Structures are given as structure tokens and as C-alpha cells.
Amino acid sequence: NAGVTQTPKFRVLKTGQSMTLLCAQDMNHEYMYWYRQDPGMGLRLIHYSVGEGTTAKGEVPDGYNVSRLKKQNFLLGLESAAPSQTSVYFCASSYPTPLAGESKETQYFGPGTRLLVL
Amino acid sequence: DAKTTQPTSMDCAEGRAANLPCNHSTISGNEYVYWYRQIHSQGPQYIIHGLKNNETNEMASLIITEDRKSSTLILPHATLRDTAVYYCIVRGYYGQNFVFGPGTRLSVLP
Image 1 (tube, helix red, strand yellow):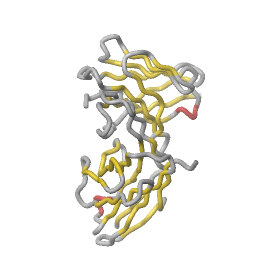
Image 2 (cartoon, rainbow over the protein chains, first blue to last red):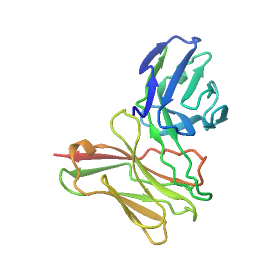
Image 3 (cartoon, rainbow over the protein chains, first blue to last red):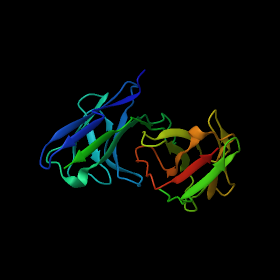
Image 4 (cartoon, rainbow over the protein chains, first blue to last red):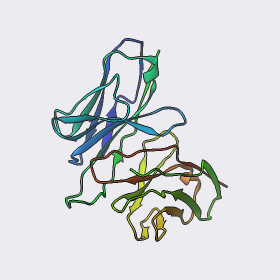
């Protein structure tokens, strides 16, 4: 059981280049999330997905797109990278509790992808 | 989701208990208190969560005041490996994202 894995671990891009970050989880979780973390700051949510084929915007979605074609994978795309997107990107997954009204939910995080845009 | 307030940084001697406070005075009845930590630049790690009652697991204890407006995370015997940023998060019904603030930077000193 690998948990949440992210590919690649580190990447350097030039301004205007595109790339896709892959997040995979083997815990059969329904929910998946992409966060970014800038130096000295907390995490900010980019996009999330509550199930296969569904995605939604988070706090800072501009400049990113996502896809959830398979339950276990959540892809984050940068169509035209900008220096402001230099950051550490974390993926997380979780499952909702089965009882209505409860809010217990534990998110499990991947190790992160460090992206430098020159 | 309710906002949380944590001290920016704290020190703790190795082997002693580390008590990390968190204020969440606007918490509502169905919101849980979660604690995560982030060691160096790794992904955040879940520690513990609770609603009303005090909770304990193999990592830590969570003490929530009766009015639920504040809580304390207790690491009973801090080690150097517990040096990390600790995040207190209050979260409502499932489907909402976690809001990570700046957290408390805990330094465990030898």
C-alpha cells in the first residue's frame, strides 16, 4: 500500500512551457485534492475532485486545469507555465464518512512536487 | 469554516511535553478540530482530530475546551523528530477543503 504518490518529484520549466503533474492513490479514496505551498506559507487549494469524472475549483485555480478520468488518478496541468507558479505542489486524497451530517474526514498527502519556472 | 489562531513559533525541550494551543472562537456545532504537521518540506501528516471530547492516539492527545472555542495539542514526550510546523484546522461538513494557515513552528531542543 503506497498511499499517495506524486510524479515527478522535481521539475524545471521555462516560461510558457506546459506540463502535467500526476497524483495516484491506492486507498480507493473518493476525494482528491491539489494544493500549492509557497515558501513560508500554508497550503492553498487549487482544485479538487469528489469523484471520478468530477472536478471543482478551489481557492487559487487560475492557470491550472485538472482531470479525474480514473478514480485513483488526479492530474494537474499547467498549460503555459509562469514564474508565479514556482511552488511545491501537494496532492491529497480522502473519503467521506458514510453518515450524513458528520464531518470527519482525514486527508492523506503525497510527498510533493517541486516546480521551478524560469 | 471557522478561522483558527495559533502562535507563530514555540520551543520545547526534548523529552518534555509540548503543548500547542489553538483558538477557534467562531467554531460551529458540526465543525471538527483537526491537527496536521509538516516536517521540513514533506507532505502534511495527519495527527488527530476531535469534535467535543478529548481524544488520544499513539501520536498525541487533543484537549478541547468545554465551549469548544480553543484546543490544545499535546505531544507527551517530544523528540527531535517532532520538530515541524503544526497546523490547527477547523472544518465543516465533508466536501469542503482544509484551510491551512501558517501554523506553529515547533522546535524541539536537545
